[in-house]
Image 1 (cartoon, rainbow, N blue to C red):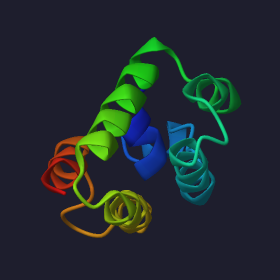
Image 2: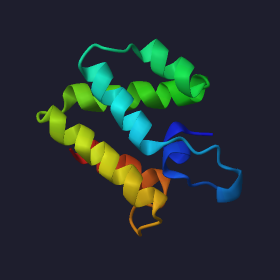
Image 3: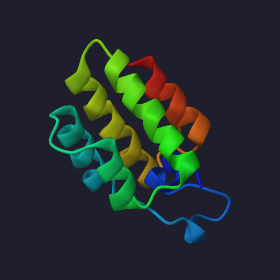
Image 4: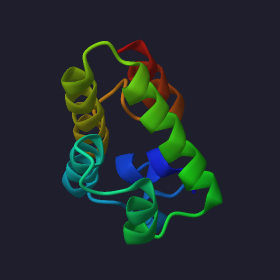
Length: 103
C-alpha cells in the first residue's frame, strides 16, 4: 500500500489500511531534517516496503526542493491530519500528492 495512503488512512477499504501515526511520521521527518535520524531508520521503524520507500524518497525530495523547509514540514503534517479526519480535498492520494507538490 502506498505510504501516502497509509499516513492518510485512505484506500479501497479504509478498515484494512495499516495506518501510520501522522505525528510520529512528522517527528521523524523533523529529526531527519536535523540529521538526528536516517532515512534507513525511518524505513525500518515503519517497516516500509520498497514502494513505500520510493514515496518516502519523493517526500524527502519535495522537502529538499522547498524554499521554506519548515513550512513544507508543517504542510506535510497538516495534509495528513486533514486526510485522517476525512476532510474533502484531502481524501485521495492524488489530491494529497498535488498539495505536497505545490509548497
